[in-house]
Each structure stands twice: as C-alpha cells, then as structure tokens.
Image (tube, rainbow, N blue to C red; front, side):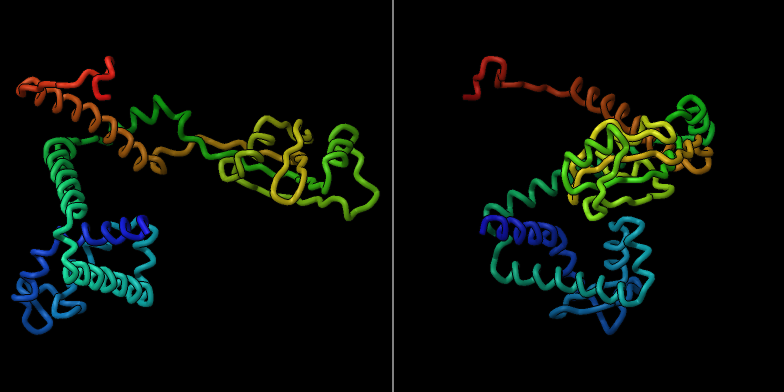
Length: 282
C-alpha cells in the first residue's frame, strides 16, 4: 500500500509543478492552435497537450527511444502515455492531493533541486567550452582507455554433474554417454558483453587452452576452451570523440562547481550546530 501511495504521489508531484501552466492553457486555447501557433495534439477535459509538450517530453527520452518515435504507432503510444499522465494529474487535483503534507514537501524538494540545477546550468555548464585540440590531446595521452574489446571464439562444454566436468578438465575425457554433456561453439563474442563469470574464465587463456576453473551456471557445470582471440585495437579519435568531450565536460564541471561553492562559502556565514564526532545528534 505504501509503495502504491508513493508512486501515486510521485505522479502528483511531477504534474503539480505544471498545474498553473495547464490552467492558463485552458483559458487561452482557441480552435486547434493556441497562442504562438503551438498545435494542440489532444485535449483532456479541456486541458491541451500541445506540440511543445510532446517535444519537451520526447527530449527527455534516451536517443534510442527517440528513434523509435519515428514510427507512427510508437507516436500514438507516446501521446497516449501523456494523456494518461494528464488524467492522473487531474484526478489527483480533484482529490485535493496537492494540499497533503507529503505532496507539499515533495514538491518543495523537487522545486529546490530544479532551481539548483538551473543555477548550475547557468553558472557552470554554460561556461564550459571544450575545444577539438583539448579533446585530441586527451585522446593521445589516454589512448589505452579506448580499445575495442577482444573478440572471443570458444567452445563451452556443459556437464550435468561436477564429477564429469572435473574428469574432462583434468584428462580431456568426455563421458561415454553423450546425454551427460553438451558442446557449444560460440564465435566472435565481444569479451565485455559476456557474463562476468564467463569472461573471467576466458580473458587470460591462450589459444587451445582450457579454463582453469569449473563454474556452475544456470543449466550445468561449464568448462571453456579458447579457439581464437582477435585482439582489440585502439579506436580512432572520431569514434570516441563524443565520449571524450563528455568526460572532459564532467571533469571541468566538477572543478568549476567546487570553486563556485567555495566562493559562496567565503561570502556566507555558516554555523554548524551539530558535532557528529561526539554523536550529539543522538
């Protein structure tokens, strides 16, 4: 019951922050286009969902999900989700949930975080500029970080019991009864995409070697034999440039934020009234 209430409150909080904007829209929308020529995609009890609303919510999605919205059926699903949220928000308003203490506190906390993020965006992020030369110099100094993963081709021997697996590992003798084991060949598998337990068995093997340990996975006891390894290569700068830009931006952002907060502390009077070392909070 508590988790359901928390989920419902979360929905309420999110839409509470745009309640004033929605009420204003209800008044000023005329026909299918509102002020500023913003096309109305849907109306829910008179409150519009506009093209701007749609695009704003779309931008919040990861790139791979935004790509899916090129399909008309996915667009219909997305607008239906926006309609659902609007209905839930309106129902929460009807029930007066915006006036409950829990919602008020959550809204205040959310609003505070939004304002802080706006400050960081304005004072820190917008002042960061990474040049192509900076990114390339970082790439040259740290090129060993940007390897393509090794491609592994191997056989996996899957046994029904540990004894049979142990005999095979030590003597390379398979059980006479073929129903007691399975042999599978796996080709050109990227090492970093494998189950970590499998990757740990394969990563230090040379061609033709068997894994040193027997591991228990979902459907049996596994022994691995490495058939081939194609070593990864340093990725070209153009392929990792975006990643490097983001890494450098985050680094600069962290440094600038610390400097900015330190400067605010110097200009402020801060009294810490609790001593955690002495457990004075108990």
